[in-house]
Length: 391
Ligand code: 5GP
Image (cartoon, rainbow, N blue to C red; front, side):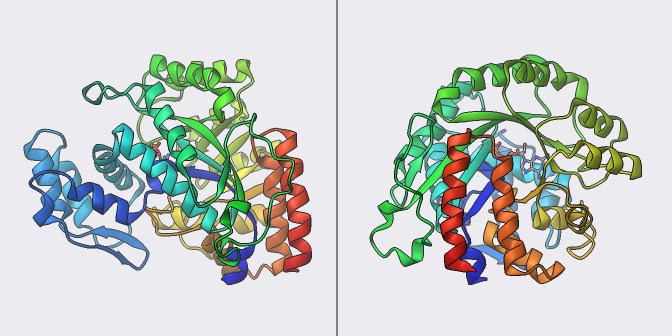
């Protein structure tokens, strides 16, 4: 495990609000008037986040008309694995608690710090820009709040836009070995703006235009995510097409549920990367493999939400053996109580990969980052140095 932490890593699939620290959720909860006595501890039971008393919380929020209590009650009370649609009910609850500018800034800062502590050296965070008139929030001001969070990080130097370059080589020394000299440590951070499957065509187009407007501020791509049983491909297609025409790299959540028509449409669209690909049939696998679209693999997430039957039977093995391009990712490190180091460890423990094979996986991930060639070269140089240290 320690070796997996020390390995410099690239994270390509991390949702901002899925990566929130439990302690932050708790402290946000405790600031809500009249709720403090209800707040108890966050218990992590066999990797599953269980909020103690959140049904009470949901009820209170429900009484105030901000949440449909009956919708989330059963999900919260569940003690074992939650299905994917159930996770989205929890996300709605999280969003109610976290969607104001200051909290978004805090979460962005902490998420970068947490990934840096895991020795992640390049991080693409994805998040859905949210409008909230009651809080004076626009999609633009939401992303500005995220960027303020990146600028506020203290534990590591954050290189978050293409104008912030470094002539010094990136350090591959793990944070834990740097004592108080952590400013030496640098992390590249880039943002992907997510389109939520519940959004209209026009809202999805707004997100793509915002990504274009903010491309000098670290926004480098578009993601399609959100509850896979909601929405129609035709609704987002104009926005995705627009992004393609503008030359913005795209990644799409694909095949989380067996929606044949949509999986085919996504493969035909041929984005730069795909997330998950859990429920493909033989023909779709064939097409995916011939297209060689890199896959963001989220082991823990897929097993917890039922996209894969178990770690042992996860489609990682098939893709890896076929030498298909892939990268290990966390998806929602907070919600699923995992880390990128843990995902590397799980691959070693489950599929018997050696240290040099894990190192190769970390190296390969650099090919698939959406950042420019200078960033890729800098990451490759650093990994070369790390190789001598770790192998
Ligand atoms: P946010 O975009 O608010 O920062 O992060 C949370 C959001 O990311 C969720 O509301 C959902 O739209 C999306 N998301 C997080 N995890 C998953 C996942 O495993 N699958 C899909 N399809 N969407 C996800």
